[in-house]
Image 1 (cartoon, helix red, strand yellow):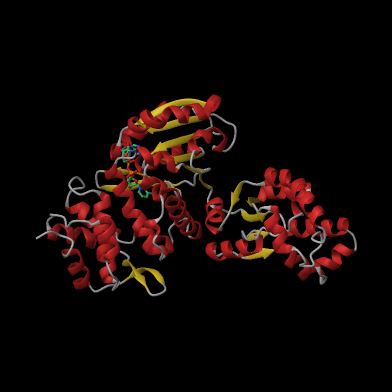
Image 2: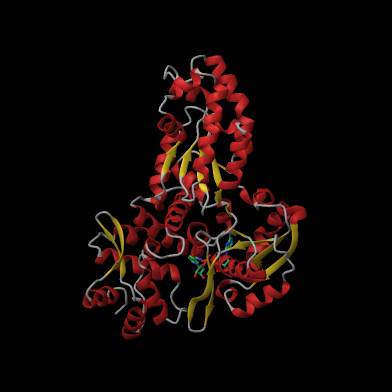
Length: 465
Ligand SMILES: NC(=O)c1ccc[n+]([C@@H]2O[C@H](COP(=O)([O-])OP(=O)(O)OC[C@H]3O[C@@H](n4cnc5c(N)ncnc54)[C@H](O)[C@@H]3O)[C@@H](O)[C@H]2O)c1
């Protein structure tokens, strides 16, 4: 997270526009290298180039190094030829996450033709240069992007690709051994593909119990004892949110922390649980009471895995999708699966990058959850599923925000639950230490203080008479 985000690609790829958007989304400073060069030298790029390309490249290299050495991570858009410098490539490898913005050369030409930039006077030369530079871009890129969501996902180390499970061996960073952890059901369906893809890197396979039973001291202790990974080994957690929460916690604690790669297989996991570095197990006193922030080395999301997900598990995930769409102000729930997952994951990635340790705005991700937790606690966690509780919680949050509840009714259609009202209210008061998350005119607000009578009335509406 302390790395710069470097945007590279050919002339006319749209690096500056995308870089500016990403910087706004991540609230980081934006530096356009060409503009910075003109500012520092007091000359235009055209004039500097006119004195010889070699001279220009050495100024470019020096200023790129200087920007990459600043401690505050920025979004930096580099000129198309900046990565020709081996020194700049080495600096990028050390100090940045480098994202390649791909462009078709014909499209790039139509954008830059006649713009008076150096190297854009001759079409044939432009195309030749494009072909020449592609291998350099490929070498330097940690990820590729078409839009700002892709850039944000790359910044968070989240890789979304249909078929990614088949490329897992290449996508798990480093070249050390990997321990594969999953629950029996997911292992039975997708474990063989994961094992095959990890190939000779696969050191061991491990099973966690299904569901919340994975998030227990007993289950993680067994896993600690089974593991034989060295420090440079990677724990790969393939499964739903319970597997990634427990697997991530084991990775955070085993040998005082080993790298880990969640491969979420449920919708809850792909749009929420596997992103953001929160890992946890439960205690008898409550869920997620013991855990750690442990940022994954990479998150590998393959939307094709959702094809084997049972319908009721999909509904669980849709509650988080609707929550994300409401927070983003965009009907993400209407998108086809691959795009739905990519856009929701990108929304969460941006929030957690802005607030990795949950000291402020990350709290917005709890929209509807205060009510959900109260209903779950009153029902003893058995009777009411988390997804249904979240859907009901969203109804309450929308009502208190003065918004229509049509989307939640239409997409999630949650039925009121039969729980003890006083128990639910007591649980809500315990949980509501810091106010509620509501939707305001300018977007989500958190820590909103609402009169107790209104909160209680909103809770009552969720409980069957
Ligand atoms: N760390 C976080 O930021 C975060 C965020 C949200 C939720 N969570 C946690 O996530 C957990 C819930 O996650 P979940 O809903 O994924 O539950 P889960 O891990 O229990 O998975 C649900 C069920 O679906 C099955 N399954 C998963 N993928 C499948 C597939 N592709 N095909 C067939 N079956 C599949 C699993 O075997 C399991 O039975 C909770 O413990 C919650 O606290 C964590």
